[in-house]
Each structure stands twice: as C-alpha cells, then as structure tokens.
Image 1 (spheres, rainbow, N blue to C red):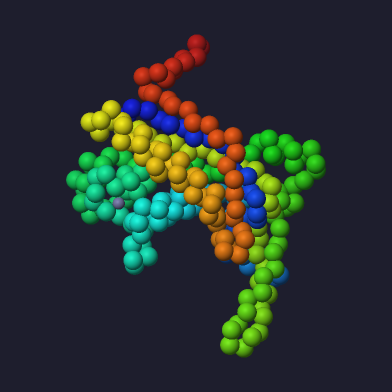
Image 2 (spheres, rainbow, N blue to C red):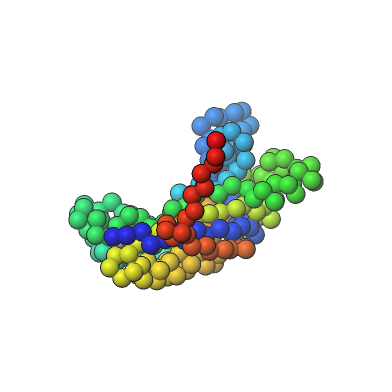
Length: 232
Ligand SMILES: [Zn+2]
C-alpha cells in the first residue's frame, strides 16, 4: 500500500439558518444558559468540531448506502471495499481486514470562523456575543399541557466558517483508482447531502441549514512536495 496523494478540500460553510452544536453547560450560573453552543475555551468563539462534521456526514452516507444498523449504532463491518468504513474508518474485531483496508482516508479539521468574516465583524464593531442568539422554545408536557420555556443558543444565520478536510488516496494495487472513486461517491456526495440535510441539533425545527461556498480541491503528491530549508 502506497500513499498516492492528499486531496485537500477547503471552503466556507455559510449558515443559512441558526446553528446549534451543543457545548458544555457544566458551569451552571443562576439565570445561565441551559443549552449553550460549543465555544473555543480560549477565544470564546463558537466553532464546529471536526468530529461533529465527520459524524454527520458519515451518518448521511450510511443512510445513502443503506448501511445503517438496525440497533442504531454506528455502522462497522469487515468488507475491505465498504465505502463507509474505508473512508471514515472503523474499529472492527478483525484486524486483518482493517490492515487490508488501510488507514482511515478522511481527516476533518475543527472549523473556525472565517478570517474575512471576522474582519467584517471588526469593521462593524461586532464581538462574538453579537453572533450568538438566544432562542426561546416551549417544551410542552403532553399530559399536563404545561409549557415549560427552554432557552437555546444558536450561531446566527449569515456567519461564515472556514473548513478544511484532507482525503488520503492510497494505491491498493489499482494506482489509487478506488480511493479516487470514493472521493466522489462519499466525500463530494456527503457534502452535497449535508446541504440538503442539517448540521447540529434542532434540525427538524429549522436549525442547521448550511451552504458550502468557494470549495477548492487541491492535490498534493508526496514526491512533488518541495521542502524549503532555511539558511541559518
Ligand atoms: Zn462498513
């Protein structure tokens, strides 16, 4: 097995509706938010963990290829050519199968607010607090008909994030053809499915509609990488 190339996919994720990816509400303040969005511990900016993006796209691809387990668990199998396990990885009991399949093909980076969007925020005098909204939802008790308000944080529509994912093409005796094929059938299809579906929580109630913009795909073959050595 030989690494043929890295395919690096970059672009913007633009929020078309509010986004809720749950954070920690471990620190309970009086009157505090019971359902906050995840924020970077240092900058306090909302972000999209790579694991959230990967998990969502994986589940959409599992649905698209009929690979959803009836017990609701994440699909895993021993098929060397399984598009889901080959691209997203799995922890099968059979190590030989995993070895034949090779390493997980895709790497999702954490997704942060786009630098251009941040400059625009600065120009308008906006801080991170201005791009997070509080949405009140009524949770109805079906038996007592008592409505209990719940507050939910969302990143507001219009906010732009910058994403990067890396896809590794391996030669498994076919010059990398199978992995190139799966890049189209799993990664590009997965991104399209995500636009049709939703990211994060409360999607069935309107949250998490996103759009990919300015997507670029660049190939990096190891033999073409130039290593510049700085003269001291
Ligand atoms: Zn599988």
